[in-house]
Length: 286
Image (cartoon, rainbow, N blue to C red):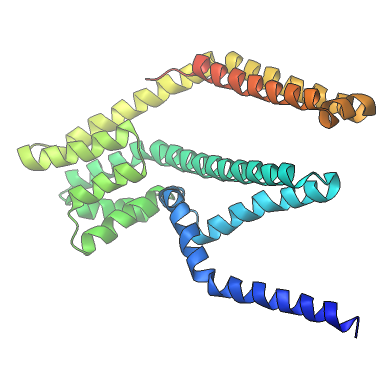
């Protein structure tokens, strides 16, 4: 009898929790989807085959799993545990956002590198008498991803009633760059004023080629500053990990005392500030 009472209590509490979970599941999914709505555009631009709800649960997993491991290993107080949970969730959100932005930047860079060839294909097709839409069909057939996917999306939009000019404007929003904006503006302007669009696109392709050559020269000139950034930023991390692994007393002083934790936070802040300043020094806009 004494054993049955705790079992009944545990089953009752578990049933109540399960009932509440399934009752509020749809509402929870809706709230999470609203929180992850700003990430939806980034997922689309990065061509990541993931829904915003799936991304939300991924963020929750990234935030809660390390928190659970630290809680079991460290056994902090309830207030400190709640603060650690907030910190890990914020870190998970920022880490996922940085990952999405990196994927978007990489895909946009690949697209911009293909844009010169795309413009030359369109200009060549228009010189032999094809229209702009038929020229884009040739681009879809001849170019690899991501240009093939993005221009096939343009063709799909024109099939449901969107004008080719509006579809190119939307492409310029998905793949933001000065070259893509110039292309969409040139196509729209030439449709309103008339003229030789193929020649305009050829000149734009030549401009893009010159910009790429200048960007490569700038990267060569700023290579020393970027290498210095990686070395100076990585050296304190390497030394800190080595010291904490080789000296248990110093590790306990840094992790187990309030002064040590404050010093670690200050060091992390200084590293982030140094990384930001080096990025400003080595960045040259053209």
